[in-house]
Length: 92
Image (cartoon, rainbow, N blue to C red; front, side, top):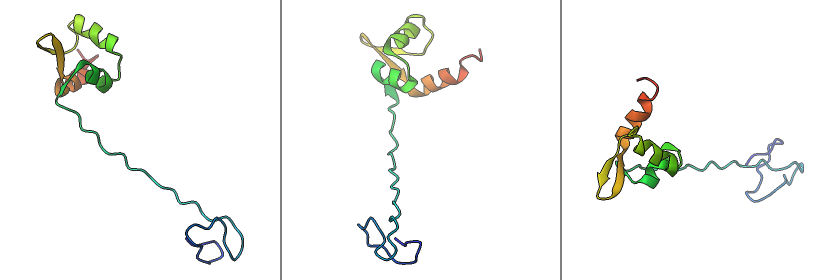
């Protein structure tokens, strides 16, 4: 790192050894990995995906207001259908 006075500051130094000013703080940017979303979602995953509570999701399912399909006694959701549903809300 370079100080304002032109001296190179040692890596772990907190102050410039020449002029005594505080060493510049390096900002580290953490890159968040892109989370892949499955094509088929469970109730828990669908509620997180839509950012709604599970009870609200079950309410939408019971009103047949949201696309879903059964797998035995379980409910599943297709990611693309949920995206299409969300995009078309209010435009019907």
